[in-house]
Image: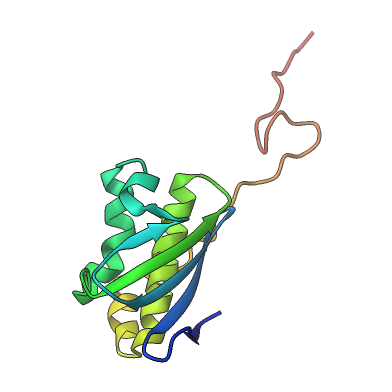
Length: 139
């Protein structure tokens, strides 16, 4: 799940995986100027200029003060934007832990390394949705 990848001799990539609902994000961190790309698009554009999503994915970097130090390349699929943004946040936090072991203490205490395991409950037979029952008729 966590590993250090080497592409060029002088550029080292760090990898982290994040999951939320049906979304999966593979995050690659390398030294650079702070560019964040999601599926080949600029992060702000991919997240539809939603400031909440942008704050969410940059929170681990802000906690460590590394906003303009690393380039982040993300491959995200499945789910919607909310699930993908949460998966990206977890992937970035995990990759930063691989980068430096001391980052783990800061990110763990801020709750950035906790995987949100809530997923949609399955539909049961005899019901309209997971828990919604059909209207009761006395006669």
